Length: 237
Image (cartoon, rainbow, N blue to C red; front, side):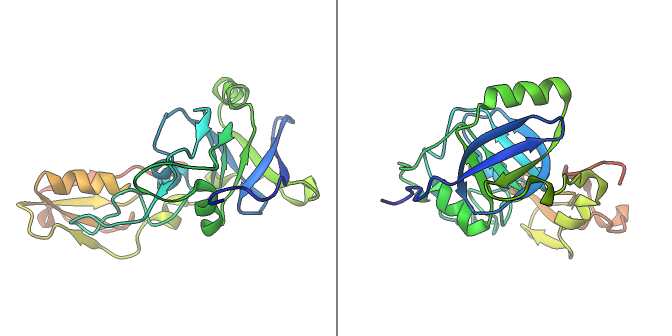
């Protein structure tokens, strides 16, 4: 059946404080490490996973059932932006949830969450007590973690702190790009990990949006307004 997980392969989420959470693996068969964070939204997992702000993070979703409306087909709006995703790919390193819906039902569903994660090479865990995990993160702050497939030596995968890297440099565009070129005023948007909906919101208000890399030289004579996008990593960079 479409979306059904064929195997019962197991994996464990290890945290740097010594605790661990064992669950069922779905999505890609891969071990990964990253910073463990949580999100409490009831809907919006396609948007969250493609949000560049979650780059290199193991994303925990607290809502108990995820994937029930599947994943839509990628389509562009009138500005050439994805209608349903915040960027061109999944940026989270892994996904951790309570339960994955194996049989999604929605008029706009094109494939299951499991299928999409496989396509993107992203592993995920289900059957996790996300309330307990979220409470730990909330009380202790973000923790480094690693998702390790059963049968793999835990020590073979080190904890990786993504905040020691210049993540903005890794996710931002490399060359300027213009959206809604016939807009009535020019907004220069500095891409530090921008979401598509930020660009779309400016375009819908009649602006011509020039998205530029994080290190683009600024000249106030070239634009009417400046927008600084949010993004991943340590602001010190």
